[in-house]
Image (tube, rainbow, N blue to C red; front, side, top):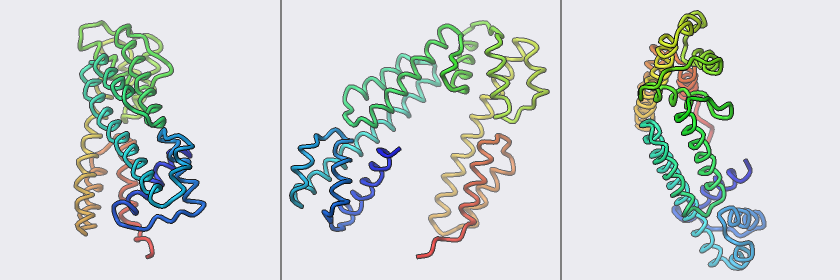
Length: 262
């Protein structure tokens, strides 16, 4: 997305200029970037053009762009973390309110769009939780987690064709064979156990990978590349979930690649 690339580019510029003291060169390319980005963080075009007439006002504009990007990004990240916690607890009303609170103050259109999409998804998942009816427009695994929450709340599992299809799609992503899946789908009890296995494998895989990533990064940054590699090898020694095996393999390839030429 061009807008996201602009925000990333200007964030790097802010680091170089505002934090590291690099000069701000107001050439045509720089003016175009700042003009576009100003509008992308809800600063009017005329205000941006006025600011770009001198170096001092351009620096003020850059600081304001930096503030809006930083605050918006941090606000959205913190909101998503809170939403994940509430969603895992089945508190979709609370999760929706977190995103509404973001939308009440956010001015950057890109971050507003992200919050609106998250809110729309939460509204849909809340409907799944209330009714047990799956929504073809929502992602698979969050819906699976919601159906599992219904089971925990004492609702009977209705083994519909939609749910069977969902389990057939998600079981391979958790390294569960077709034979195991079809056997489980013979009864609601088996389907419930299958659902729990899919979700637990993903939770465990994600937790294991994130812990290893933290250790890998620390070791890499301290110069211990072999120790960093071993973290990913340890993941691969036990991991069966394809998504996290692929992620570990990608990290290991990155560590084994030669450093870029200076």
